[in-house]
Structures are given as C-alpha cells and as structure tokens.
Image 1 (cartoon, rainbow, N blue to C red):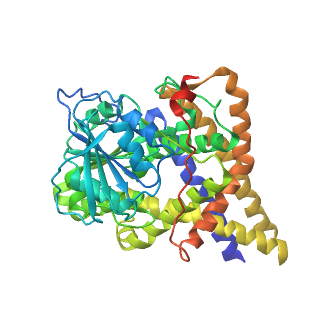
Image 2: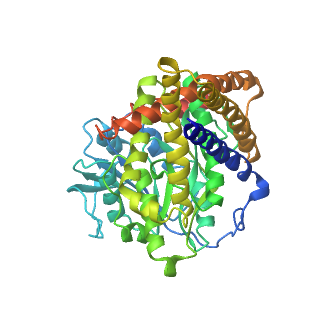
Image 3: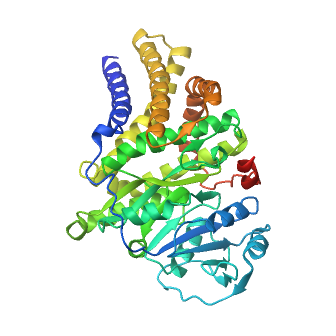
Length: 457
C-alpha cells in the first residue's frame, strides 16, 4: 500500500508540474530570441494553399470566398476534390468557372488516380485537382504533387485565413532556419467583421463556447509554451505551414487516423537523423497568422471529432514509439509527447477512474480517496486558472470580447470547469481504447451556414 500511495502522489505532482510550467512559460517574460522579430522582407515567397475536400458542399463557398480576400500576390490555391459524392465539385465549378488545364506533377509521392485538373477563369491562381477517393493524407499528397510554390499551407475546407495571414507567414519564413510552422486557430462561429481584434459569442451555443475556450487554452497557453521549448506539434489540418521540399523528403503524409500530427513527427524524426545538416532548423508558432475553423455544434459531432483526435494521438504514439523513446531526453517534442501527453493526459485519467472505482466497490482507503479528491480539485482549479489566463493572453495578443457578453463568458467558464473537463476526460478514456478496435473515423457534419451573412448581421 505504501508503494501505491507513493506512486499516486508522484503522479499527482507530475500532473501539477506541467500545467504550472505552461502557465508560467507562456507569459511574455519568457519569450525567446526572434519570437517577435519583424523582418519585413522585400519579396514574397511563393505559397501553395492545399485544401483537401471530401463532401464539403456545406462549407465550400465560404472557403472559396475567403481565398479571394487574401492580401498577397505570390500564392496559389489547390482544392483537391477527393472523390466527393455530394455537390462539392459542382459548387467549385459554379463559384470558380473552371476549365480543364494541365499541371506537371513531381511524380515523387504516391496517391490515387487523378481524373482531371481544372483552373478558375475568374481567379487564375485557383486550381482544382479532381481525383479518386483515397482519404485526407492521399489528397494532401496529390496536392503537394501539383503545387508549384516554395511554401505549402495545409487547411481543412472549413478553415479560412484572415486577410494578412500570408504576409505574417512570409515574415516568419524570411528566417531560413524555419522549416515548418503552425498558425493560430480561432472558432469560425466566433468570427466578427474585425477578425484580427474582435471575437463574439452571439452566434455560439454553450457547446461552442467551451470549445472556444479549449482553443484559446491550446493556442495561447500550451502551444506558445511548447513553441518556446521547441516542442511544438503542428495540427496541420487546421493550419500548418511547411517548406515543400521538406514534405517531399519525408515522404509526404501517411494514410492514418492521425495524419495531421504524423507529419510533424516525421519532420522532427528527419531533423533528428540529419542533425549535422539541420541542427539549427526549427518549427515555430506564428502568433499573428490567424485563421478560423468551424467547430461542431452538437454533442454527436463533437464526440466524432474528439474521438478521432484521440485516436490520432494514439496512432502516432504507436507508430513513432521507437523514435519518441530514443529521443525522449534529447528532443523536446518527444519529451512532451511521452511524459506530458501520455502520462499526464492518459495514464492519470485511467488511474483516477480506477482508484475511484476501487474505493467505491472494494476497500475504502483514506489515502486513495485523498488522491481522487486532490486530482479532481486539481482539474477544477487549474482549468479555472487556465481559462482566465487564456482570456488574458488573447487580450494581450489583440483580441477582445464585447462587454455585454461578459456574463455569458463567465457562465461558459463555469460550465467548462465543473462539467466539460470531465466530459473531455471521457473522450480521452474512450478514444484511447477505441483506437485498438476501430481505426475508422466519422466525418463531422458541416453546419451549412452562410458566414458572410451571419458576420455582417
């Protein structure tokens, strides 16, 4: 029993250490050299924006309209219609006035058969690759094959960029040591007419509100801290930026439930192997490159999304475990992936549920009960602090909420702390087990909203 007590309280203190670490390390006093540099490059690097589409009829018009507003010259957009069975392709045809064209592929990455390639008559820098269905990773590989620019930006079809996002990317990649980056992602349903400084909850239900808090905590606390440690894992589906030649060198995307995280670990593994040639190369977070992505508005769709995310984490853990274990003490991304994500996020959740169940049905132990109560108190207190700090952080980076929404924001925080945190624990528990029985994932239904009309109103 003494050994079990020691294990539980050691685990508890580890669970406390990492949140405190990120809470402090994200603060402005710990910024790293070059983090906020403005290089103001005189030329624009070429950017290819890749958008894989599978049955995206409900959001594709919003995506197309957002691509027309970007304040940048040297870029192209490649929509990859991955065998959609709905109206995605007809809507692309209608909104872009497509004509068939010819683009030369690299012939270095494998993907399903390309049926045809189109170019927009209205916007000659927008292309559509029409192909047989092969999954998201396959579609991204096809997009890389037909892209022509130096940098590759990967977006989901429901993610839109702000007008100045590509200029921010160009500024950061003026540092030749930067080989990949992640942008900041906000919730599309909170977007206003001033997307670089105002957020709103007027179009959001409580479920969207707590997801917004999740994103604020993830990007403005955890990811800022991890980026300063050089331990950032980019979620490329939401908003990832890569040097194209590096994507080709690592073999493109691997078809799996976790392809979004997989590509970051592939790059980290490649840098580790080529440490003499790439010892100064880095993956960064671009805090002024802002995008907005649509999030689920129902519990059913939220369940689909979060279970897929957890399956993706476990998939990459299983696939990259030799690399992660070999470099756990030498590479920050491996350390945080193993120690924080595995032990703190997954193991602690299972241990807590196991101890609570044991106390309830078997043998009451004051020390074990104390552990459960301390862990639950830790979840409540630290998530409250995280919520408050995330809102303070997002204000520091230039975003504010309307004053009349303060009560709504306060109620959302209470719901997040006392209810939603325990729901997300269930997602972790269920998704980690479900991966070993079913590696499929179900697509989240798009809302079909007209965001231009909603934002204007």
